Structures are given as structure tokens and as C-alpha cells.
Length: 349
Image (cartoon, rainbow, N blue to C red):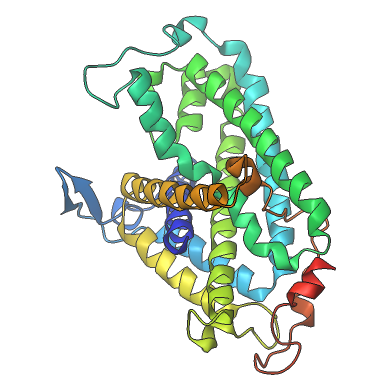
């Protein structure tokens, strides 16, 4: 879990950088390649230098999100809510404007035949793609880290997590169908596929291009926020349990947030976002996520749970449904009464 959220935040930050650079380019502002790409790449089974210096937009995003999270959980929740409304509206706009331009022949064959190499199309390609995209579902288990900041967890957990899973699943499927319908799948291996698809459709939907770029920038920003929200709270709880030095269990005297762990997480994520390419961090986060969730499923199965995957899903808690932070009641001094998270009795109540 320690690596899962850091790699997840890094992955989204690097993807955000590509969309942000393209958006600025359309507005006439061009960021030099040396300052918008990673200096390292993974080719022929080893790291190589690309000639770039660092990915500046990705670093700036991580630093801004870190500052928002340090400033308070209410501020973070408010920012995230606005971003979610914007990105869902943009997704629906994309589906409605591009669906009339779907070319059914692009879906034939619906499962492209394997090229003869494992993982390239065919059923092995489906399995490989599902493994790489596993990180897309990290946000749901990330919500569980904010459980102690939720007032009515027993009600909010199933509503927020299962409801958001269903909504996201529907949107994932619809967007994928539209993308592969308007553009042949062989041409979609680009950093900004939605914008690429709009450009291919032509003037009929070109007026929406800027909106989609803004939506992508806003949407990916919330992904970084969720990842950097979760990791500090895991470190905080580990410190509370004695698994990390006690200093990590402190909260900010004014903002009542785990500021030290948030700053550490933000710094590590910023460095990784500046140095490593998208395909490498995607692979790392997917591997870590699959290992983590496999361990969780095994643990729940050993505890005689009949449906470990579903049980694990309903452990989460939404940021939007009845979200009432406890940080406002936490004192600055961690060794004094009232300075730590509510005990189990309070949480159950």
C-alpha cells in the first residue's frame, strides 16, 4: 500500500502533464520538451536518458495538491467535489457529441486476433491490458483511508463505494466504445487519446476540444488528490500503531491534518513524477496494486468471507456522502488526550 498510492499519484501526474502541455500549446503557450518530459525512459530492459531535464508540470501539480491537502480536509473535499462535477460533465459531453460519428467497422473484429506474441491483442492481450489498467480502481480503496473522518460510515460506505463503482464502470465502458468507434484501435496508442479522437472526427466536434482538454486536466488532478490524500493517513495510522516513529503521528496545530506525512508523500511523488516516464510508473503501480489486493483477498478468505472482493469494496468511504471530518477536534500535541484519532468506541458510535 505504501508504494501503491505513491506510484498511483505519480502515474496520474505524468498523464496530467501531457494533457496540460497540449492544452497550453493550443493556447499558444509552448513548454520546452526538456521541461515537460521525463529524463529517464525504459527501453531494451534498462533505463536510458531521454535528453530532457524534468517534467515540470507534473511536479507543480503534485506540489499544489500537497499544499491543498495540508491546508485542511474540508478544503480538499471541496476542491475534489468541484473537479468531479466538471470532469463528469465533460465525459458526458464527449459521449454525446462523438457517438453519432462512430464507424461500426472499427469494432470489427471486436477482439483483434493475437499477433503471435503473448500480450499483443487476443485474449492474452485482454488479460495484459486488464493488468495494466488495474490502477484505475485504486481510488476506491483509497477512500477507506478517510474512514475515521466520516460521521456515519455504516451508511456511507456501501452507498459511496458501490455507487461510485457502478457509475465509473458505466462511464469507462461508454468512453471506450466511443473512442474505439470513432478511431481505429491501432491509432489510439497516444498520450491524449480523447483529444486525438476529437481531432480525427473533424470540424463537427472540434469546438469541444478545449473543453475536453480542460476536463482531462481537471479529472487527472482529482486522481492525484485522492492518491496523496490516502498515503499520509496510512503512514499516520502506522505511526499510531507503533510501526513508524511517533513524529509521523503528529497533526498540524492549525490545519489539523497529518502535515508531516503529507509533505513526505508529496515530496517523494514529485521526485518520481519529475524523473520517470508514464509506461514505467503504470507498470509499477499495477504490479503493486495486484500484489496488495491479492494479499487482502487471501486474508479475507482465511477469515471465512464468502465474497472477499465485494467485502473489500464495501470497506471504503465516500468523500462526498456525509463527509464530516474529525480533524477539527484533534489537538496539536499527539501525547495529550484528544490529540489522536477517535478510539474504536467513538468510531463505532
